[in-house]
Image (cartoon, rainbow, N blue to C red; front, side, top):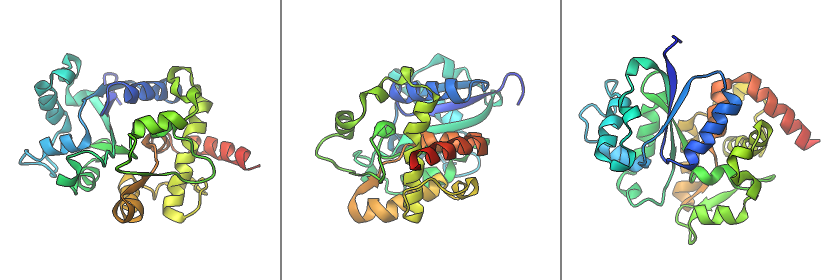
Length: 263
């Protein structure tokens, strides 16, 4: 990585997503040069706009150019700093979006998540996409000893329902330390293992986690929950971003934490 390069994190929302990633950056990636930009657009809106490009789903599409064009059309996200970015400055691109299955555009684009995860699977190429199920607020959902399943079309909005059951400590994002985040994210790794192997436990080895790609997680969600029951397993993608980025050393920290909770 040269002196002027940085990691680009693109978020759906401009508030909670950015706050969480700023803390993740400060506590887990302090030596990395990282820039975070929200685009105020959900994944279905982004997919709809990208579908207008002739080179969508090809090796020629440049997400930086696409998003620059999109945000210039939106007063809410028209950011001069983002427009000034140049592709050669960026070493890696990561995108963070919500599943948002209740969105009115979701039924119109049933292949959206499939195609976006297939396209955005490499951070040094188009970029790597991470999905929160059902939304970014899933990070604070109380998960103890078993997976949590929520409806895609709930009577009460997910943001409201999870705010009513979460530990209020975890809403004070800037007050959380590294261990707090490890504790918060561990159940999401356990839940993912349950999704793949029907066992609510941390994957046994780091190599086991490498089989659990974002694309495969979505396929499991679709087969086990989305299609048969119109529901999703609660999963925060931030745990997977950190694990895939920091690798075995971070996994070892989670192993120690998991062992302490089991003893």
